[in-house]
Each structure stands twice: as C-alpha cells, then as structure tokens.
Image (tube, rainbow, N blue to C red; front, side, top):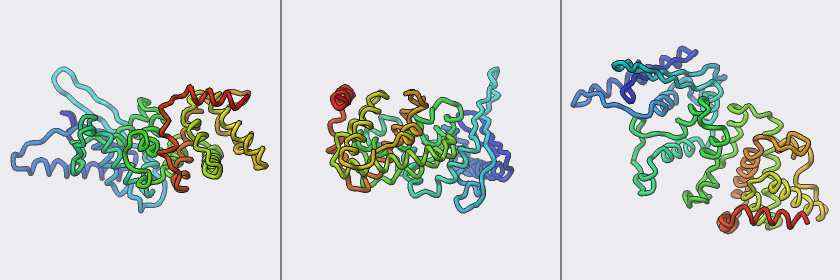
Length: 326
C-alpha cells in the first residue's frame, strides 16, 4: 500500500480510514502495473506531492457527488533508510485544503485549473519549445497546482502567491499572449471558494470585494474608462491606488451618481483604520481586479487595447494620480 518515489517510500495516512485505504489501494495497483511490465523492473517515479494529490482525487471520499464536509487531513511520509542517511519528509494537506479541492471539483473551471497546473509544471524549456506531452502522467510529470497545495501548509508559498499563480489566469493570458480571453473560464467562483475555505476570510469582506469589483467593471464599460482600469493595474503603492479610486469616485459624484466605493466598503476591503493599509491590501487589490476582469470579459471589454501600454510603468500611473488629485 505504499509507492516508491525518488528512491523513497511514500506512505499515506488520514484520520479518515476510508481515505487511507483508498489511497493505499491505488498505490497497490500502481505497484502491480509496474511489476507486470515485460522487464519486471520497478521504475522510479518523481514528484511525490503530485502522485499523492492525483491519488486523493481518485478516491470516493473526495468524489464530487458525495455530500457532507471533509473533517480529515492527510499526512504523507516520504521515507528512506538508505545506508547511514535515513530520513523522512512529512507532507501535510490540512482539512481546509481538502475541503477546497472537493468543492472546487464541482466548479466549471476545475478542469482548466487542473490542466493549467500540469502545463505550469513542465520545464520552462519544454514550454518555450512547445514540447507538450499528449498525456500527463503522475510520477513522470509535475502538477504545479497540486504541489503548491502542499506548499501552502509548509509556508513556502503564500496565499497571495498561490492566487496570483493559479487563479489570476486572465491577466497571465494577456501578459504572455497565451489562451484568448474568450476561451478562459471565470476565475471568481474558485477564488471565492479559496478565500472562504482556505484563508477563512470573513464573508462580509469577500462579498464586499465582489460587489466593488462588479461596480468598477460597470464603471469602466459605461464611461469608456480604459485608462482608469490600466491605472489600477499599474499602481503598486497604496497611496497611488487609493488616489485613483477616490478620484474616480469623485468623478461619478460630479455626474450625480453614487460614489464608486463607500467609506465602509473601502475600510472593509483595504484599510485597518487611521489611514493604515491592511497588510494584505495588495491581495485585496488583485482580487478586485480579478473580479473586474471576469466581469469586463462578460461585457466584451477589449483587454488588448486597454492593456497594451502596460509596459509604460508605474511612474506614469503615479504621476496621473498626482495630477488628478490637483
């Protein structure tokens, strides 16, 4: 019921016995297939985290059709007793990450997220040359999404990095000229699941981020404000970002419309009070932009024309903010 990976034994345990048994059964089948090959040799497999996550996704305990919460975590032991250097690496997947994966499997964007993880796991040289395999195989290929789920628990990947790497695919598609925007699924439903189930973000804050993103997207479309959208994209300093929002809100008020963002909404999303930005304000900014991009796509917004001058840099955006404030 264990499998060999990188010359070590990979052993899995969960508080849920059925989950442990089902993973062990899958590992047993892998071993049988290996040993039934013509040469009878056991071929070493790489990427133990990817192997484990793939096995977990094949269990009935994580089946999307099953009801009820996941109340168990998973711990894997990657063990060697080689010579004078015995060692063990402990790989942990907490219950909130398992619950997120189980819920995410039911979303329409799940297949895209998983397949994107396989693509991101390829060596950069292979991606640049277009050397994409016909089929991804656990043990031979690495899934960056699967791997980073474990690294969240190890704190080697921050939640902000995880969201930007795996859920902000509309911006990535524009920057690297990858998949056309029309072929990308909406990222917000999965993002909201991650915020609530993994980061335990307050429901009020998540709902406010969603509402603000929707409102700003409509403002950009109704007023042909592509420049405002680009300013928000470029602003990496809090004072500049806040100034852009305040100035746009003031312009709406001059038109006789309600402000784009209320005091309560701004404090909930971006500030701790007393003009102090939240430590995670850049995450909040990215989340608002992600929601905007999903909504703008649905409104047939021309991303290419609006973001083509992105390389002009942050300096221009900050200068525009100062000019507007005057």
